[in-house]
Image (cartoon, rainbow, N blue to C red; front, side, top):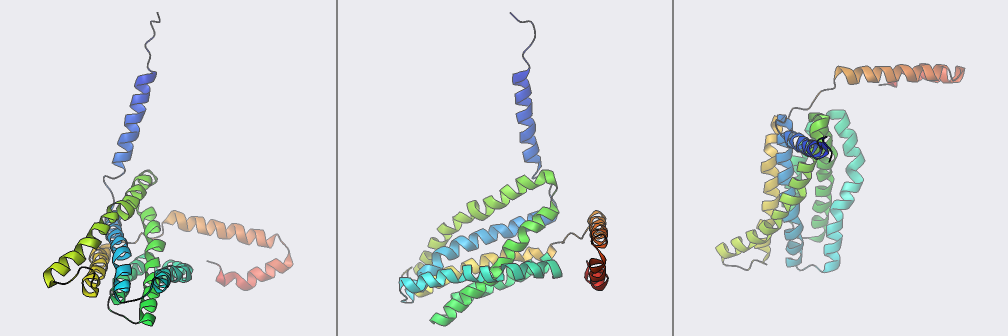
Length: 261
């Protein structure tokens, strides 16, 4: 019989409890920016799930065939494909907060317009623009969360962000079905009618707009002294490397010096 106590089990339990405390503490306390961004993500999740359900039924209620509905569903993705890189450039040039505020205002606007128009051209055009402006959320949200959290908080905050977008946002499917039913009951019309489904689209737009209002209180983190020092060091290394490459590279460096960041 061994007289030495077995501490491996207690060590494992201590490590597990320590990791659990670390994960829980990553949520409290958090900067105000994080709460504002997570709140907007919640509204975005509701908007995505409600509109995904009601928009297709709305277009179908207008009498369009499935082939047109397929093209209509593809337009936001095409808009996002076209605008992703330009929106990222704009966010780097003018700041992420203005771009995020822009999407919080324009996304519900074009989504509501999708619920108002009835002609094929305007349906496709509004869906395309809605995809263009919605891209700003995907381009700016995660960088802002990264800048507003420490390395220890980041994993927990990103997990919560995904949960609010995909998990809690899935409740929007229930609302997407309940709102047309409610409107139809109040107006004594069918829940599958154009008017009832139109109010479902409006509710999706309203979620994004209301949950985006607190973003005006967002404070975009400024570049730190350390990051500026890193950029200066990188610039110095680049200049030295070009000088050592020969006379032609030195001439190019002299000509383009003012364009360096």
